[in-house]
Length: 410
Ligand code: G3I
Image (cartoon, rainbow, N blue to C red; front, side, top):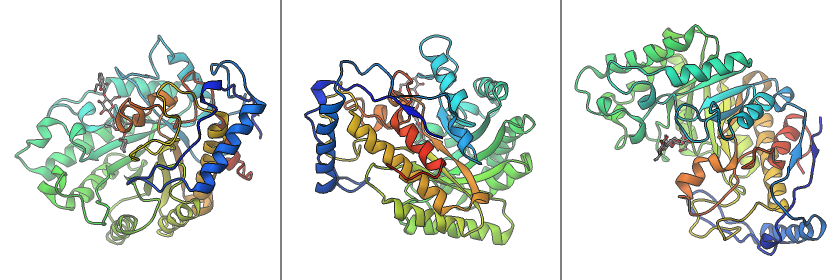
């Protein structure tokens, strides 16, 4: 299936800019070859498709992204009182809903099912926002991936839990049981990130900044997975982490943990690779190897939290463009399209069909991305997702569709 791409229109003001390498902890510099390729394709775009406004469509399609996959094709959504809420009646809410209904079979709540949202006090659970999202999913035949039952992140661990002085094993087990149990009968929440980001880069357990490790040692993972399975035997249970796709000590440690679980009968169904990656890093071949390494366990593998910014947010200086209110050019959008295609192809090549747990893009429209507000700190624009600020599908969406259709990435 081919989407009918309409060439975007490009502001003359940004056409002269070229990408130059930015490096940092998150990735390599753009090579000089890729920099020059970018500049030359930018100039060619400038001569062929110069037009007046960036408000018109990048692409128009009647197709459904999810039709092209035998596994869940998901997107992270905001809801409740969050900005960019999928369920808001005003603003762009309807456009977001249209985008989700058309292209995705699965959603991950980006925030509203985290610990502090669902369990703000020891004896208080607040399910209303999540229930509204579940209802939307049910109304439109979508499933939800629950995110996340246990996460060390300071902002997301409720205050009462940080200060808990009772029996941690009983407390954590009850937390997981009550949350998973609440959603278990609805058949909408079909999978969970049970534990998120438990490992440090060197493959040791995250300790200094994890109240769970400090109070329970590594046993907290097992307690959480066992409680989740008991509360919903039908749901797929995932361990989810970042910086796995490049392979190495952290991936090895996650796989060792999963194999230990399997050997001891601790329930686990899959490994989630957070796809917070760069446009030039890691190499697709490396990602494919990493996916295959995880799939060799026999577990399911998900490509979760996928976003591919144009600029490397960890870089000291941003590559392109250098003014905040710039627009994404055709050349950069095309490069991002190819990268999305290559990454999804790496997933498909690395993971046998029966073990594909799904892919999830981390947000709907570009401005809603956590990268903008948190890593770029609202000081620099970027376009990491599949839809632009007006909810028009971008070439990146075509890149995912091409990969799902088994087409060559271009
Ligand atoms: O909703 C409030 C708003 O009312 C308030 O005015 C504003 C001011 O700070 O904050 C808003 O809440 C923000 C929330 O996102 C909702 O958008 C929080 O500050 C902000 O910290 C929170 O960030 C989320 C972050 O996780 C921390 O929980 C991001 O949206 C979310 O995309 C991000 O996702 C994580 C994954 O869960 C795990 N892997 C890494 C990934 C990126 O950090």
